[in-house]
Amino acid sequence: MIKTLFIAHQAGEKLRQVDSIEVVTGAGIVGDRNFKKSTWPGQNITFIAMEAIEAFNRDHCQTITPGATRRNVITKGVDLNSLVGKMFFIGAVRFRGVELCEPCKALGDQLANESISNSDVVKALINRGGLRADICSDGELSTGMPFIIDQKTL
Image (tube, rainbow, N blue to C red; front, side, top):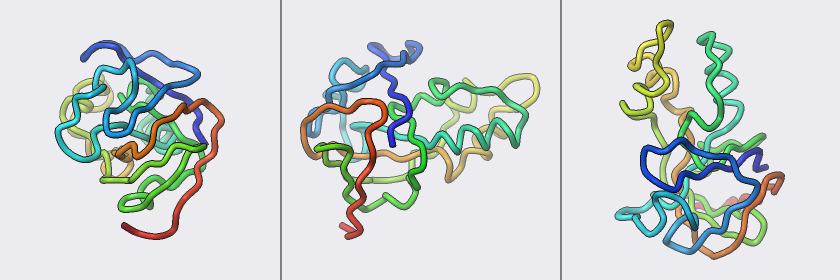
């Protein structure tokens, strides 16, 4: 299910939590910094599991917040890694899982502090950094909505 949603109006701006978002096929999230800026598959929307954030905090004695991950959708109880190459729905909105959203140097730099280096942040989040997806139908998402997974691969 969707636990939390985040957007930022401009690049580099701190993400802000919202209760709902409007998504547009192939364009992304209305009002987000990346809306209509996709140049390759998987740039429409990003997901990360709350379980991955909690594990990172527990395993590395950190207290990062969900918004600090720079992902749009925080999930609970969803195996995001299994959605690569699969269609899934949240409500009536259809998505295609494109690739894992592996951590980059910029995220490592942002989350690094005196007790964990940027390279250790990146290493800790490999295969736990979330999912990049394409939006395949227009609609609205809000917190609490469940995922429906299509077991067919693309």
